[in-house]
Image (cartoon, rainbow, N blue to C red; front, side, top):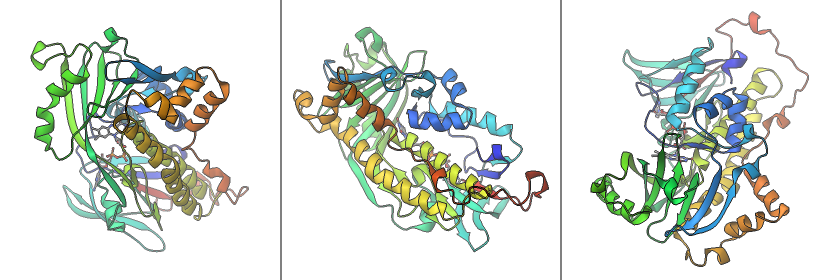
Length: 406
Ligand SMILES: Cc1cc2nc3c(=O)[nH]c(=O)nc-3n(C[C@H](O)[C@H](O)[C@H](O)COP(=O)(O)OP(=O)(O)OC[C@H]3O[C@@H](n4cnc5c(N)ncnc54)[C@H](O)[C@@H]3O)c2cc1C
């Protein structure tokens, strides 16, 4: 988005290609809004699909409550998109290759950051040796173990859940048992989620596991877990399912002390983490980036001074604390922390879903909740009529504002 406006952006990636491992898959409407602004939503939807219903069930498959996403947004173009993250990355890569103002360098590993009054810089290890690269701003999008965040702060406040998660991709005919596009199962031991992630029959099954096991032990338990969880209870040697990927991972709720320190900014997992149930990690990260774009382009076009970046820091951290952290924590606890037989009596969210089947007001509460992580930063533009001092053509490459995004 910055590149489309003529801002020079240097993307630095420590790997040798974009990360092709299967990870997040679902983009909620608030993220779809940003993909639309970037001009890639229609293509992302065409390469993926629009999931329809989402529901909560007991382990034996009994349907408890759910919602058809078509009720949440009337326009198909605004609805959730499902497309595995590596495929979205491929699409982004195709688009940035068309932009002369954006460069992407692989094998560039950030080892430190710094700044003075005029510029910020990153120190990078590359195959040609160490380098220092400068720009007006450095944006740390370097994920959960962000070196940029570590260079700024010694702590990453929050907690790690003692429950572990195992994410798998698997071919199994769940539709034979009337599974909907996304199904969450409430159970103290075998809590899990089954979601369709492609149009060729692949499903993502993510499930909870007992604490304290090594990755090898978690992987060894997968056949038992599938047999307990899956309808039809297939055994590993039955050949009834085809497992294509399995990745155990730890889940966290954490928020960096600040998302802005002078000319250095943090976004997405580098700034905050949440558990994946409800898909708020990826969606929250994409919404951060849309807001940060509005702030930076406001500065670039002379419509805002750089205090708008303090607003970015304040608002995005507040939204994490008030919405993303409690809602995502509620999403995971809903699955393991209650009696499935009493869930419809006790769980306020499930009660709201049931009410929304008949009651317009309850449906409105759900619709409003979907935009709860969005924020319009253009309201802080404080120089509305100022135009850039030089037109784009008059600005030389060295003078142009640049951002290094890691
Ligand atoms: C198995 C798995 C399943 C998941 N499922 C879901 C899900 O269903 N829903 C959901 O919302 N979220 C899910 N997540 C989390 C989701 O994928 C993340 O929230 C999202 O990818 C964050 O994007 P990001 O760009 O901030 O970080 P990342 O996707 O981690 O990207 C960071 C990038 O920075 C690069 N990098 C790191 N350090 C450096 C350095 N020092 N120098 C240069 N480059 C560097 C990395 O190589 C990487 O390419 C899942 C994660 C995993 C691992």
